[in-house]
Length: 161
Image 1 (cartoon, rainbow, N blue to C red):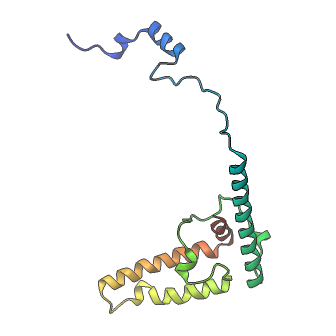
Image 2 (cartoon, helix red, strand yellow):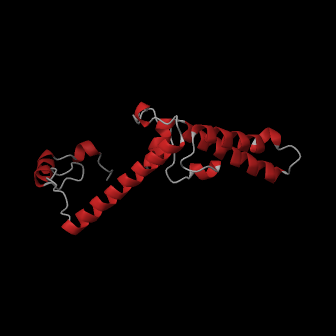
Image 3 (cartoon, rainbow, N blue to C red):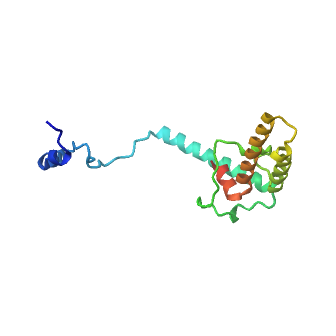
């Protein structure tokens, strides 16, 4: 006996019964009203303390940057996430450039210039292929770090992560 196709096997009464009981594999059961999980007062206090500590850390970073860099103006930045350049919050871009997190724009440019002159692929003639490949990879890491940190809104978004 040949197998029957789906049109021949469809039973409307059976489908309505499955739908009304919520047993249909194709139709999701009615959404149940979900309630927020209950958090104990001590956990709430810990969460609020952690958020306050992070906010204080961000304020201290902003204040330190304001002291070190006279051109720093956080109020002049547009922080809409549409204009931020993509970055990875798990990478330390400051370490890649060899500067502190309070470095001014001039310090960033000087560090980038020095590293790019040293690591640029065109400057790697006379070195082995492995050394040249390592220098090239490091050069692109430095370029990536510089593009993230030189753009003020992106840098601020990175610092807040």
